[in-house]
Length: 566
Image 1 (cartoon, rainbow, N blue to C red):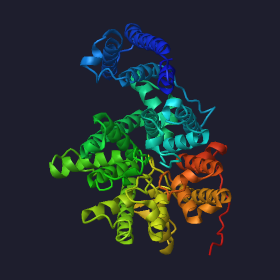
Image 2 (cartoon, one colour):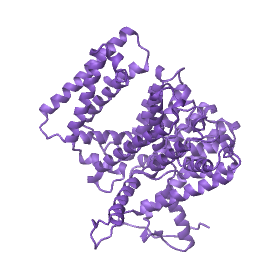
Image 3 (cartoon, rainbow, N blue to C red):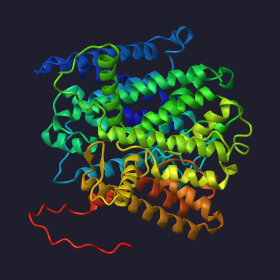
Image 4 (cartoon, rainbow, N blue to C red):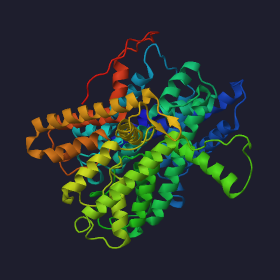
């Protein structure tokens, strides 16, 4: 009730009489939330963990403070105007919703939906809800059509960044906040949030839930599912908070109307960068005057989008390796057994890091040389290098731009398309065919050239199933992108092959870069891009797994035959 009333209150203009009734509902809902929390402690037989009652204590204190300031203190707005802001009511309602929703029993039934189907449906639900929220009167200044709202919601949830309307001038701050929530939910996954908070407060979960979540989080052991969820949540919010603070201090305060707008800008761009969304509250993106020469801001965004694009398993592995290196190498603490030297940095991490670094270097050098006297002409010294580095990093599914994309040379556009197609790393907030897939393809070429029958690297052999999945991902991506290009050219033949191809690669890899044709596309072409964005985010392989019934393992093998290839 509280959430629906909150949406109704901020989504529509209210009369004074109706606003008083809504305020009465707020008071009732927040009061009920406090009472139910106290009742839970009196009736709960199981011992409640310290982290739970700490959350409850903080949320109750915040809620009591909001109730007193907003409903019982007539002079509050004169003395503590900061706390009198309506955003505190939003926060209190949200805390109450999280607490009460987490007490519900969430049971995933594999007999009804397999993990792939559940994953896909969760994204469809968020996109549909986001579309309705963006169509609220107060979300935009002049209204928005259903197709444009659906496109924007899909772009936000699929962390793409392609826009058909200008985010800064079209959406109100309420609408931009909705976009921010959709980006965060799409970047991490709404099931990750729901499952984490449910386990956080209850401390237990069914075996079936853990099985499904282990598939979604790529956990090696079922018992580590919620440790993985916890790491994802903690890593995400820690990096985003630190990123927002650094971005805030890197900005020129004279460019903003007040501290709140500067804080909102920092938070929005930190989340958008880490989730590789590419949305910006600036009319011309980071190419806006006053921001395109802020190289510190660009460098911070590069770090955020690279960290978000590496993937959570890689980040956890890097933290583990850093701890090992610090204790063993630098401090000389012999915490590991002498007879066993662990391979702390996994093969997956090594391949991903080497591929990511190689693509970053190749992209930077290419951008620097191709655009030295073109897009980089207005930059000097270190500015040219940072801008080139940004131009190499952002196609890896981030979608920010610090140069005018329409002025890029054809060689730069082609390299950008390649970088967009490869994308980020597995289990990350980014899209594309993934760096590990591209690395396996390259290793397979080398292996075939050497006459080997298997792929070997770092004294390990790549599993055949991994190779098959990699080439399936490559083939399916090119098929979907190819169909998308042909379809859009049918509806918008005047847009040009290169522009349309760039748009489709950007949509599939959830990048968000464009050569300026997105807003001028027909509704049919927009719907095609919506479908491509969605397929790129959930992956075509997941859709096929969701559609086809899994075949039981058979204990036989047919005779092997070689097929002529070349």
